[in-house]
Amino acid sequence: MSAPRALAALVAAAGLLAAAGCSSSVPRDQVASTIATQLGGQGVAIDAGTVTCPADLAAEVGRTLRCEFTTGGQPVDAVAAVSAVDGGTVKLRHHHRGPAGVAGGAGEDRR
Image 1 (cartoon, rainbow, N blue to C red):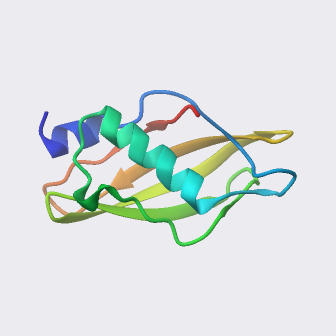
Image 2: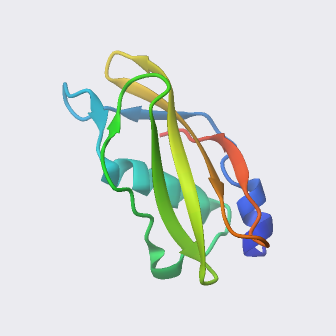
């Protein structure tokens, strides 16, 4: 599957992440790993296999975190957003967008 096509198909499931311990955030590495896993499952080749997120994601509904990855040498932003919090479980939605020619997609991720 081509990268733009796979990117358009990215993320078809609902996303649940456990907030670290009793803290009120999801560690950036866990957010990045979740996005990378979903991209990989869609056949997207992430350059260097890395999604980077600059900070932890606050476990509050509506909070967002912009992460980045590259595919085919093209930079792509992946924005994770908290859609629900239930105790220590955080439900995430994420979408991505890239430069012209790199399709975007939207959806949720289950973790």
